[in-house]
Length: 397
Ligand SMILES: [Zn+2]
Ligand SMILES: [Zn+2]
Image 1 (tube, rainbow, N blue to C red):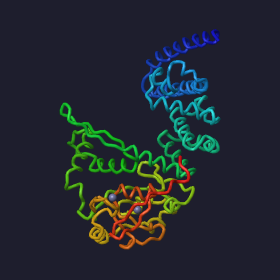
Image 2 (image 1 turned 90 degrees about the vertical axis):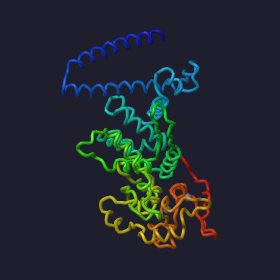
Image 3 (image 1 turned 180 degrees about the horizontal axis):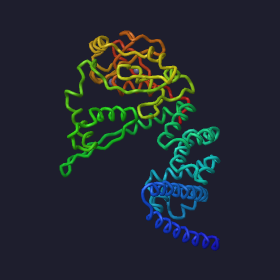
Image 4 (image 1 turned 135 degrees about the vertical axis):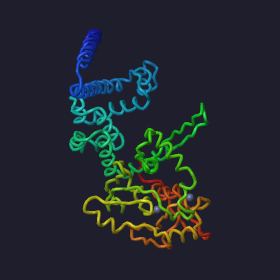
């Protein structure tokens, strides 16, 4: 053991010397060769991450981290390896999943697959179980080879959705649960805004604050300053309320999806929001439910079919709804019409008509509860609707 430890120490000294040597050579190159050198530097770092992952797997199994007083491996990594909680948890996830993903493990060790792609695969394996990912490992690795990590995350999310729509919905609901916004008290003349949104809300906010860009020629504000100014503009009352009955122009989201996803067929793929973010089928059904706020487009040959199928609530119907419902119809909710979506009691994709008898106004949180949350609706004699808590789902992720 001591001899192996000594050999490791002398190998480490040689590796440090090699890094010094490499750094000195990198400093001598310029231009295109420097660019190549940077790419190779990242590849080297990924090789070292692969070595780290393999060692971390064995260290995890040994339980040796407890000898340092750490309660778990993540805590040990934070304390000893200068990693944030998130970065530490990601590495533990990789170390644990890789032993069940032989092709990924192999490609990582030889440098064919980069660290970030491995992280995406490990996360997918954590969500679905490594056995399911292992069955599709070859085709996922082929896709990883042609995509950057961001694009590959989209592919992996779509894969998860196909395998387990319920798990994907649970995850999206968990993401939604994490939403928050804080606006600090002024300090040194500055107010700090900080928050998290789910992908749909994030896309709406991003589209809204990016509208009006790019700038005029003599506009010397930075993009960040323009977004900040736009946000403040949007908060001024004349912009925020289209019209009191909510019939005015609504923000637009563009979603790519298939008919299968819209009708909620088992095994259907997720839908794609602007920028390639994947959202669950239930979210698409909710957004499509009030087609006034969205444009749903199909993939290839489905375009014609969906264009025919999708519909928007005519402004006159919307005004009549505002007069009848006077806001969200959920019991005890008092949100006004301009904060509501039009909900089809029987979804139009299931042949429900876009007419008054099949339409009610629901605020966004209640609309979300009905679709993604699976809550039922029951008409009350008062003309309002009670929300019925869903039965526990038979399976969850
Ligand atoms: Zn709806
Ligand atoms: Zn409501």
